[in-house]
Image 1 (cartoon, rainbow, N blue to C red):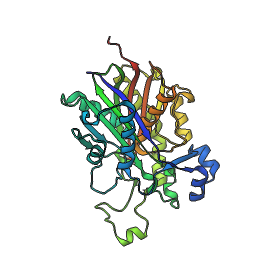
Image 2: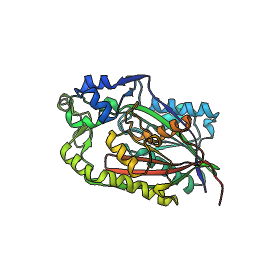
Image 3: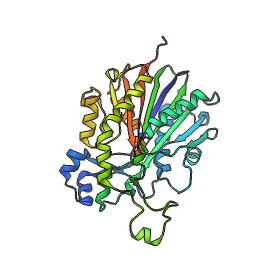
Image 4: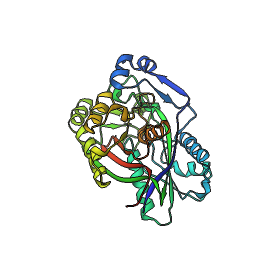
Length: 339
């Protein structure tokens, strides 16, 4: 059974925080932010604009652009940031209700920055494993700019976190834009490094936790985390890519375009080089920053609209997320001809 990416759409909030603004907030020179962090600016959600609102706007844009009847959706799957409108709450049913997908199964899975390729993998498994599901609307959003404490130097590598949303429609029996193989690797030794320390069962919210600003993203031991990740990040990105490509009957040499997450410029360039691509064949979201699981699908949507991804291209969607998981999925863009 073939599964294809039938449509996509994205939404970015109106407010744009420039590199100069981030410099003012953090004390990091603007030149360092632009040249090393690789960020010219990022979008910031309005105070009353939450993950469900961002998701609905991306989904509604997809529905409108493609003349889709929401009542014909079989499933709505939320895969974005775990920091949602409310604690201990599912966003997917509320999103499905608001877009009129009254016949859809609504579900979600908790994940972070590796969420894009993982969402494609899980949706493909739903579609091939359940004959009652013929299409899945994926929606992902992030509002994690509000979890940043710019005075906390331990979390400075996350100062590129911005806000945005993406939606993608996957269908069975596809004759173009086929979703092929996926692969993941996880190293749980990093799992306690990046987190919001307070607000869970280990450290419930209290006056003391609020006063100590423990409800923002933090890094337990930045030096240890950096030292560990410096050794394994590039090899694991490549291994995730090679695994997904092998499952797609392809190799690194076949990759035409890369849609990854936003990261520091040096790592982005190292990955592009390792994959044998030129920089103009790899999306780099220096005007959005990093948006949890949103980046790869948003990069694909942009590349298709701009004409950077063309029929016949083999597109690699690549991501990594704290936890720590590296993930990749492969899409063959354009018409499918059965062998």
